[in-house]
Length: 227
Image 1 (cartoon, rainbow, N blue to C red):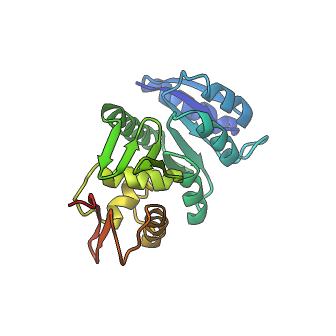
Image 2 (cartoon, rainbow, N blue to C red; image 1 turned 180 degrees about the vertical axis):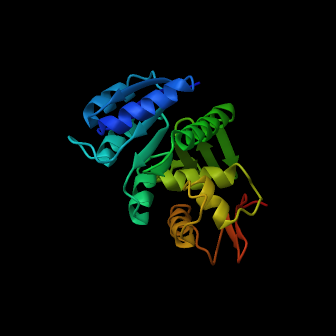
Image 3 (cartoon, one colour; image 1 turned 135 degrees about the vertical axis):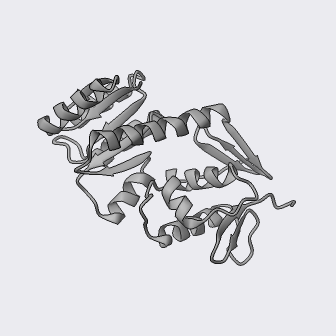
């Protein structure tokens, strides 16, 4: 069972979700304002934060940035905003998952379990090495040949997901589902754009790859340049 912080300004939704999660054995605390939620989230006593975006004092994306600047606590954004560009922006800002309202408490609980499994798996194997790439999952940092890489959250998660499967061709649909949490489809261009940005930071191109090799129509794999 998880310790959950619910940051939601709608009293009806807040009370309903708190009650339903508590009935399932979770410890739930809640806040109706962003800054209160940020302060509570930084206490370090929660396993997962469920964050609305449309909050009365500070926009949820800004609140997410405040939390992510100093904490790796998993954050699930739960909001009525369903624009694809907004979803990508929020995930890139550091959200671990994204739920569009309305949703059932059972769906939220399933997302919580998935996020907590991923967190546990990362803790079990905190460092990945592929050639000159060193990926520290716990610190959310990566270096290439000893030099730090300035990666966005999604660039880091994409690199880490591939590095956990070296040599394996991973399809774009799998990447959308596992990295962008879009199991019911999404735009392939999202993956393409992030791969392009990632390649640039790794000092390579699609035409002249070192680490990231694309198999047309199948997916992408990461390999050590020495292989």
